[in-house]
Length: 50
Image (cartoon, rainbow, N blue to C red):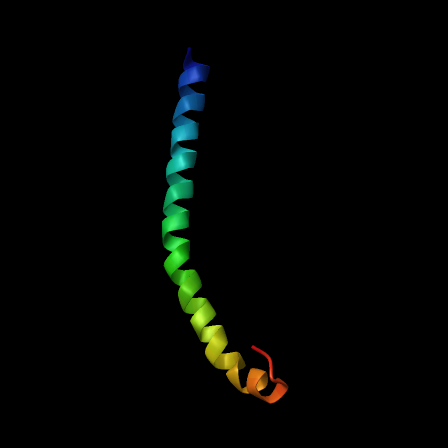
């Protein structure tokens, strides 16, 4: 009985953690991509890359 409850609690915590990480990663990823675009713009312009 204890084992099943423990596994259930651990699974719920894992799902909660994953959802929180996904929610926090998305805005940060957009900022990083924008920053990399600004940093790489001169090189991309010289090389004719997108």
